[in-house]
Amino acid sequence: MNITKTRFIGLTALVALLAGCASGPVYRPAAQPGDYGYRDTMLTHQHYRVSFSGGYGTARETVDNFALFRAAQVALSHGADHFRVVSWHTSPITESTAFGPTASIGYGYPLWSTGFGYSTGSVSRTRYESVLQIQIGADVPDQGPHIYNARQIKQNLSPEVAAVER
Image (cartoon, rainbow, N blue to C red; front, top):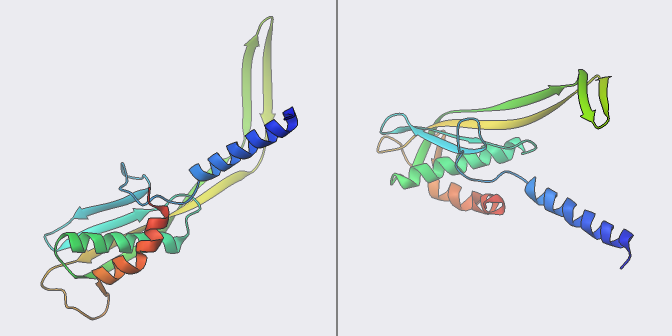
């Protein structure tokens, strides 16, 4: 095999590996505040705050679905078949990186070197976080506005979650 073909195969494998690392959100607990994943907090014995924070490039709809899926999991884990969404807010989180003047000094035997540069522009990336406050318990009816069947939500969204779960 010639060296060009070997380099091409190596480069293709590297690109595939990097694409796999950068693919979609992973449905998992967030390791810390501001990290990707889900979080839930018990506010009262009947009220919980549930959230899902997606990665850059994750569609808003996916983030909303994962937050709703987590709400269903919380309800079911507390023995509730239904839950009421008391409030639901999805917000964009945008990170911008501006480019500006740069300077560097380096040393390489036998010479010192300096460099200066300037570039204009910026790059911004947006991700979404969906936060729900839910109510579970005997006060939640089986049907009505903002009432969800936890088992149906879990069943209907499981294929989407399983596609990105690791």
